[in-house]
Amino acid sequence: MDFVETKRRSNVSRKLLLAAGITALFLFMLTKSPSTTASIKFSRHEPGVTHVLVTGGAGYIGSHAVLRLLKDSYRVTIVDNLSRGNMGAVKILQQLYPEPGRLQFIYADLGDASAVNRIFSQNAFDAVIHFAAVAYVGESTAEPLRYYHNITSNTLIIVKAMAAHGVKKLIYSSTCATYGEPEKMPITEDTPQVPINPYGKAKKMSEDIIFDLSKTSSDMAVMILRYFNVIGSDPEGRLGEAPRPELREQGRISGACFDAARGIIPGLKVRGTDYKTPDGTCVRDYIDVTDLIDAHVKALAHAKPGKVGIYNVGTGKGSSVKEFVEACKKATGVNIKVDYLSRRPGDYAEVYSDPSKIRSELNWTARYTNLEESLSIAWRWQKAHINGYNN
Ligand SMILES: NC(=O)c1ccc[n+]([C@@H]2O[C@H](COP(=O)([O-])OP(=O)(O)OC[C@H]3O[C@@H](n4cnc5c(N)ncnc54)[C@H](O)[C@@H]3O)[C@@H](O)[C@H]2O)c1
Ligand SMILES: *[C@@H]1O[C@H](CO)[C@@H](O)[C@H](O)[C@H]1NC(C)=O
Ligand SMILES: *[C@@H]1O[C@H](CO)[C@@H](O)[C@H](O)[C@H]1NC(C)=O
Ligand SMILES: *[C@@H]1O[C@H](CO)[C@@H](O)[C@H](O)[C@H]1NC(C)=O
Ligand SMILES: *[C@@H]1O[C@H](CO)[C@@H](O)[C@H](O)[C@H]1NC(C)=O
Image 1 (cartoon, protein in one colour):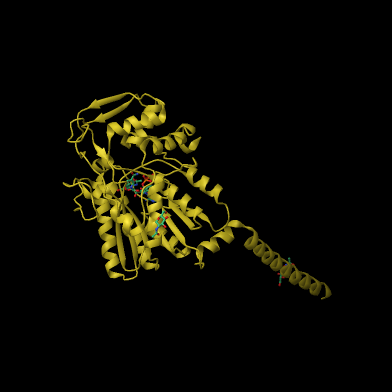
Image 2 (tube, protein in one colour):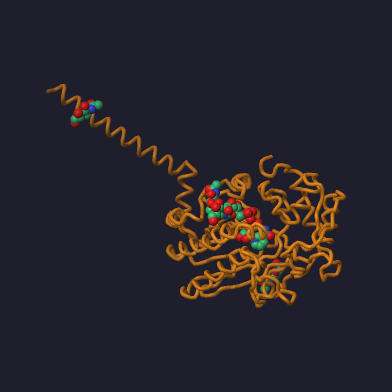
């Protein structure tokens, strides 16, 4: 009898001890563990703090945007499945902003609607900047479904999740490719959109989805930014452009130019010297990524409920491929070998923006308008990161 009593008592006190231990451990984790504290911060709206979901934040433009948002005291959640982005870029951002509640990275596929919905229910977003996409014109012609799926269908998933969870502010990455080949230059926001490749069409369809949704939801605040050709990288050299090696050949001119300067490829192939342009080569409007991101931050600040703002983001000045190559030679100090070949089908002669709308409405202007300077900054990063983020 006595024995049983003692045993029972010791059993009860042991349980009490265990319960106290668990509680203490929990409280300890709550105050000490960054992940616990952080996930609580990310899951609640906080007055004075704007929490932005950045899709594609591990990519070239997205990572630069995250850097700026963190610098400007935003709270940021990156969602990216690293299909094209770099975990190395995310790690650098995490090292720069390690404080709890600043930056969180969620590995997920935006094509997975239930994963996206879970992310929206576990986090309190104030705004979304939707960068994630596949973004190569040539690839889009060869694999159109990849583009409609990963651009249009994924945008639909995002905006549905926003509607379902009451997130009202959206900044959308669109492109001058939605205009196709307009007859009149420069391109204004009223230039008819007649895209000529699946990339441009998929982006145009995404814009349409967003428009139509915003018409039914009077408190949605939307900004659609149509970028021209993006170049450059962080002037402080923390981030750069590092596409997957297999995407190199799809590549954009700046990547090809750096690869040629490094000797990874034998030289540059310029396709078409008989266009109706001053020197016969194609003319494009190159916008520095730092300026582009500044436009996003201004768009975020100016987004108004019940409105859809549409803005071209370019410098307003066209540069020819020949001029670009010359600037690249100077920036890299390498006398890159250039082969001039016949035209490539599907290229348009001349594309440049009229940026007066964004200037007057958002007080935005491009500052990095010197190609050689933008390319020098990017080259510094490229030279220091021969293997991209895997150095
Ligand atoms: N680079 C340009 O010149 C340019 C010009 C006009 C518009 N844009 C647009 O800007 C945006 C960003 O382009 P970028 O050059 O930074 O491209 P990028 O490939 O470097 O970045 C895209 C990111 O999105 C991620 N992503 C793609 N599909 C995903 C999915 N299903 N789930 C989760 N993550 C996914 C990729 O992993 C990558 O990190 C795109 O929407 C692109 O269409 C780019
Ligand atoms: C605790 O008490 C239960 C009965 O309430 C008994 O079955 C069990 O063996 C006891 N456990 C210990 C560790 O004393
Ligand atoms: C990323 O998402 C795409 C769908 O958009 C999917 O096809 C691909 O397999 C995913 N990649 C990874 C590494 O999860
Ligand atoms: C895009 O979509 C296609 C299916 O249409 C898929 O096979 C592919 O892996 C997707 N993801 C990427 C990053 O292209
Ligand atoms: C516009 O931007 C410039 C440069 O950033 C700034 O000096 C000026 O005060 C801004 N004007 C308005 C009306 O906000």
